[in-house]
Image (cartoon, rainbow, N blue to C red):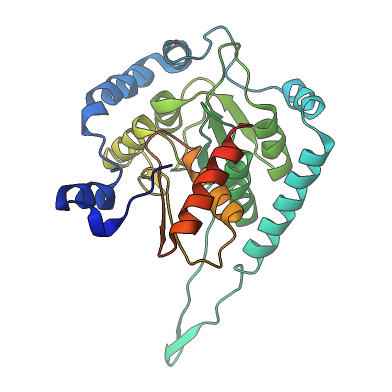
Length: 291
């Protein structure tokens, strides 16, 4: 972790820090377009081929079986399962509070206007993989989708080179009520959900973060009118403003939580206290030693 005194920085260095990482993906668009077209033409076979090309395994069924989900419970500590279940209940409680029916607005004799909420029948949930497992991403997307009444909640997550998904992600998907789970990552997963394949159903809206290839694929899918998306998610970022009263260990933990997402994550703390900055730097080093 670097400590910089803003008063001593040159204008160019200050501009570099202020701009940090950007969500540009123009340079990957040609590759993503080829992947999208490949999946459109080749379906499941193309998804497997791209899975293998980008670090996974091609020799597996794309759909996760119930037996694989049950086996995942055996690999996850009981305390983690309990934590996922507790998180699911908390997320559900919060989103249930949003499900209030608005009263109609009377605008004239015999005329009333109201806003009606209708669930999207099929939604795609992309859960990133790679450097870490993100069961929390599963819960944050799948629980609201279930409460909204989306009948098909299709999840894609990149497999490892043995064709397996992270056990904690599978448990979270089961806890949250995901209806269809597939071993597919990157742009090929987005293409599969946007076009539909022999195994992976076409969805009407895709949610979830990912790397630049995933973001580019989502933007292309939306621009082509294939499906809607939540947003083009940029690199993870956190900015913490703290004074000398802050707990250095808590600040360090919050910084690390975002830094683990990808190499282009931007994590910064602004403080007037040099001693705090030094303590946070020490805590970051200490906490990451065991990761």
